[in-house]
Length: 375
Image: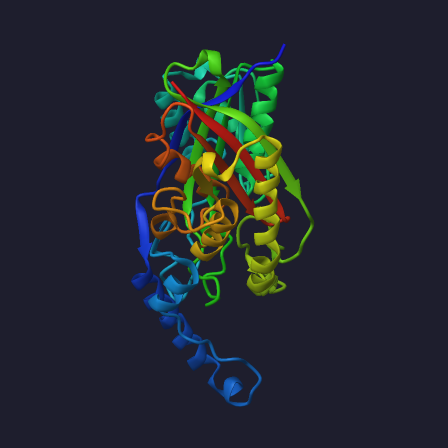
């Protein structure tokens, strides 16, 4: 027997602190001036490259980002630090990622009209996990009081859609009645804030979706009609240091490749056709035409990428509201981006309306979820 999975509730945890482009540029330029002064002789000798200034105009043109939320602001804006200062928590305290995820999960449960007693599994799907073990998902499960099981998964910026596919498949098969997919993203911790080409990209957030049998939905919901995932190995988006910056006596903590790395030109050239073809193929196999598609909730990478994909999928420039962007307020929040857009821009859809949630990123990876409004 097969069941129809549905997204019945969503939740978003937004940090209290935010950094505007104005604040970010001021801090970065102060760091650049400090670096250039300290290395003046080497720069003059041609041994070291001078750090160029950033600007608000450059950031907005490159990304469409105007501000971003962060878990720590002081460290990022300190020219002598240039990374978040996150307190090391004791083993008897909730971890920072679990705390963020629990907030989003509770909001998703409330939106669905359900409680932790109605949840059969928790999947923590994120681009960076705070630790290897015990699984952050199991900690979230414990803090929520959920019975059943939990596990972590990482597919970079596609983690949310891959998590949704895993949960939907389990609900569809009947092995569980429901699952929470949570996406706590502390992207500020793996961003290289000292690199002009990328210092503006990321923000912090956590999202959650409750997936359950459509017959168990307590109100309006989105039936998951189909899911599709794909991966193709590439080194063009990479982080060789894992989760957080560590002080190391061998000096490796300052190696550029130990933080977020991206070959932006290659990513743009290679990922956009992959994502556009993936969505088009998924739609064709499910007999969904462009004129039937009411909404595209895309991964919030940058505005140019989203505009390109939207035009390719729809065969025209997306009309206002068809492809909502939250980049200007949240920046790139990795796997959480498409879920923020879905959470904030889905209530207006009518019965029978169809939309696609799509995320893509390092791997390369791409995941798409075709949903239909019900109730």
